[in-house]
Length: 426
Ligand SMILES: *Cc1c(COP(=O)(O)O)cnc(C)c1O
Image (cartoon, rainbow, N blue to C red; front, top):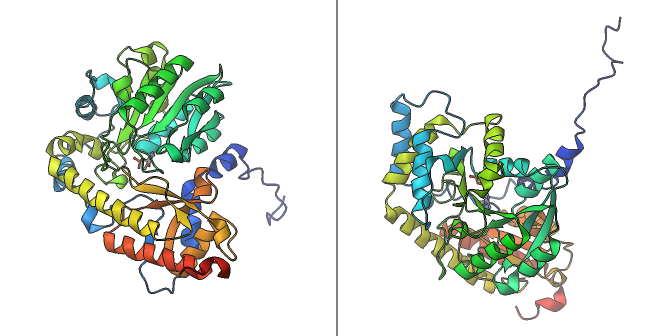
């Protein structure tokens, strides 16, 4: 018998190729890498412009009513049990009523499935659609979890373009060209991460007509619902549910600024019941019954979170976001080597194009972001992580003074690394 264990042939190993393919799509790991570049001895505060989480900043603290609702859910002692599969009934009803406010028809309790954040909703939808041979159309630039989850589940994905010269609208012709008889769905994100755009009523109508023509459903990621601070109002895709079946994904992470509470939802915004007839709803429930639940405490608090949050909280939050977007846009305009094709009007992000030829010894967007993190303690997400090489995604959901400071550091970094010949004007 072997006593030392030195020559045991271990039969396990981390070589799941699907997981490796999925992790290649992970934006978290890319942003994490940028944090790894930061020089810990830099006394300046780190400017976290890489991801959209405003919750650490006092000026973006959630509504007191939302905090009180969670505290009351804890002390009531009524939410310590396992929740039901689709979610606590009162919470589903509250979400159905909340979404119905903005739709031309009423959703019912049974149209809602609660999830552990919107990411969980994405996980479920990509799994449900992964029938043999099927493919989905995803936006580029996009939200990489869709690709990661599709890759993990063996669902083929194809990328359609968002057009910077058209305010980042969907390339409708591109969608039509990409789709074939195996295409089952297209994903849109509105208001848009990473572009900061908001789709007009007419554009959404065009998307619905296109999806109908192709016989595919629309998955509308509306985690930034109502996070619109420009001239266009937010219109839910579900408004067009009569034209084409829509699955709406959402949650409280962004509008209430509590991504750590992990509460999202999937809504069947499909008044004709096509998704039900095609057993999509059943599949969602099946997947949900073998996956995690959002914490019962937060589910229990949802009716009060929705009912008690004053409209003034949202108005204030949007005023602050508009102000931050304005600071960001103006500052970026003063930096020669970046161009911002579209002023942000929603979500918490803006995409800017980097002129790599401007620099002396910077290879690409990833190299740029890594050196920026190292020299200036400013973290930005390289566009490569979103399918857009030599672009940058900048989050402005940051305390305004830190945002300004961070962008000023970005500017001096650019000037310092400019090729001598291109640096004349400054
Ligand atoms: C933040 C974000 C999500 C994830 O939301 P969670 O509720 O935090 O899981 C999903 N989609 C997009 C486009 C996002 O920006």
